Length: 375
Image 1 (tube, rainbow, N blue to C red):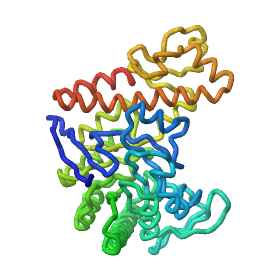
Image 2: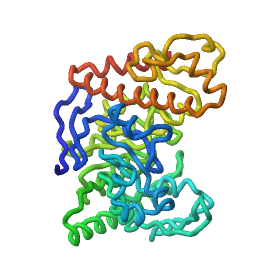
Image 3: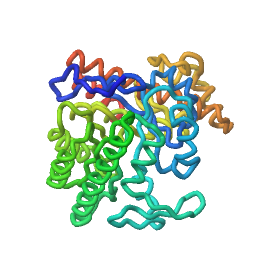
C-alpha cells in the first residue's frame, strides 16, 4: 500500500476531513497521536491501543538512538516488528529533546553536540544523522531536525533559528533523497517543520523557504511552549493558510481537550501531546463534563464510572471510588486504568470532531467543549 493523502470534505470553519494512507494502514484525519516516546505508550499494551482504535502512534528518535540503539532495532526487523505494532508510526527527530538538555548541548551549523542524559556520553546529532536513524527505525513518517528555541524569544534568536532550520531541512531532504536513490524501497514520508517563534513574518518566511524543498507534509513546530492559546492559534493560522492543500499539516505538541477543535478549524490534520498519558499518571481524568481529579476525597464513595457518557472498557467496569482507592494505595493499576480512559477520551474526541466536520457543525462542537472545560 503506497502513501497518499486526500481531503474528503471541508467544513465552513476551515477544518478538513481526510485520509492519510501508509504502508501500515490508512489513518482517518484529523487525528491525534498517542505519544510512545521509548517505543511504548506508558501504561498501555499494544493490544489496548488497538482496542482503543489507535491507527498511528509517535515515538522518539533521540530516546531510541540512545537506548536500545537504532542499529539494534534495524537488526531486529525495524521498529514495527521490535515493538510489535503493525500500524503506522511517526518518529520525532529528537530535536526538542536535545534542545531541552540546555547545559548538556552545543548548537553549531553542523548539528547539535550533546551529552546523553543516561550516561553522559557525547554524541553529535546532525540533520543527516537524524535521517539515518529514522530510516533504520523504519517509521512511516519522519521529521527533519530543526532548531527549537524558547518562547518568548528575542527576534534575533528567532531569525537565527529559522535560518538554521531551513539549512538543516535542506540537508535533511538531500540526505533522504540520496538514500532513496541508493535504495528505491524506502517507505517513509519526510516532513519539514516550520519555525519562527511568535513572529508572523518569520513564520511566513519559514513556510516560503520550506515549500521550495517540496516536502510531502509540513509541521508547525515551536508552539504550545508557554505562549497563550490565542497566540498559538494566530501563528498556526498564519502558517496553515500558506501550506499546500494537498499535503498533511501537523501541529506538534498540542493540546488540551477543549483546544483540539480550534486547531482543526485552522486546517490542522495531525496533533500529538503527552497530556492524556501524563495527566492520567497524576490522577487527572478527562470526561465529557470536564476534568476529574480522582484523588479528591469527594470520590471515595462515588459508585459512578469516570464518565457516564464514556464507552471505554474502564468506564464500563470500574467506579470512581475504586480508581481513587488505587491511586491512594499507590497501585500501578491506577495509572494503567486512568491512561486507558484518557487515551480513549482523546481518540473518541477526534472521532467526534471528524463527525462534526462531516455534518458541518464543528463550531458548535468546539463551543460546547470550551464551555465544559472553562466554564
